[in-house]
Image (cartoon, rainbow, N blue to C red):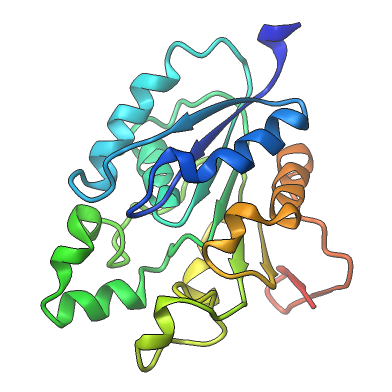
Length: 223
C-alpha cells in the first residue's frame, strides 16, 4: 500500500529554504500523499543546475505517480526538469505565483544594476527565457491578486499582482488551467485554499472554479 501512494514534490522559490514549504507538506500528507521537499541553493545555482539535482533525487522514488507543487522560481526549476528529462513518471504540476513570462521585479533589479540581489536566478529563468512547456503532463498555474509585498516599491508593476509577481506573468502557453486567488505571493504558502486547489488539480487536471466564465480562448477564469 505504501509504495502505491502518490508523491508530491515540493519546490520552493527564491531566497528561501524547504522549511518554508513545511505547512504545505503537512497538509499534503494529511490528504494522503507522500512528499519530497526539495531544498536547493536558489541564489548560487541556476534553475537549470537545480533541476539536475532534483532529477537525481527523483530517481530513487518508488511511487508510480509523482506530482509537483512549486512556488515562484521553483516552477522554473520544474520547467527545466521536464525540458531536460522529459520521461518523467505520470503526474501533474501546480505552480504558485511562478513568473512563467519572466519577472518585472527581476528585470527592474537587473536594469538598475541590482541583479546581484537576484543571483543566478537571472540565468535562464526570471528574465522570461525558461524553456517552453511542451511536456505531455498537465500544468496548472495559480496566481495571487492581493498586492502586498516588495512589488509595491517598483513603479509600473502590472496589475493585478500578488505583491511581487503580476497575474499576467503567471500565464504559460501549454498550461491546462489557470486560477486567481485573493492571496499575496508568500501567503500562498500558508493558505488552505491554495492547497485545496492544488489537490483538486492533482486529482482532476482542473482547478475548482465555483463562479467561472469561459473566455474567448477557452480558458476558464475565476470570477
